[in-house]
Length: 147
Image (cartoon, rainbow, N blue to C red; front, top):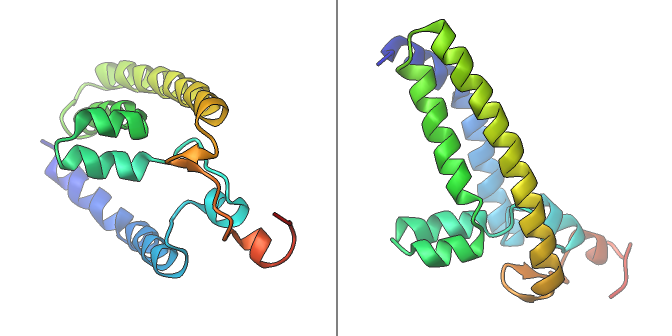
């Protein structure tokens, strides 16, 4: 394992991770949600349900996590491959091939995520969680849209 690279990455990511943590904390405290699309417009985004999916996954509820948002599966796979490639693979040639694979998997995952989002918007919205409308969105509060 490349410990020096890991330590360097942790140092470089400290400020962004703190900023993201503060955003999540403030979003939860002020709005009860962290999704900027839901906060602003009141509609779910393609990633809605991902946080819930990871919380369910931690509890061992794999089926419920997958129903909430199956995007957790490629996220875990992609992060796992990235981690192995970044900290364990020493060959530049092998690393380049893995990086190419990661890019292809990322594109495929994004396409599948959008297809599933459209399905959920057509079949679930606005009555089935997490695909619900939040009437306390900022545009409505500011009076820019009416119910």
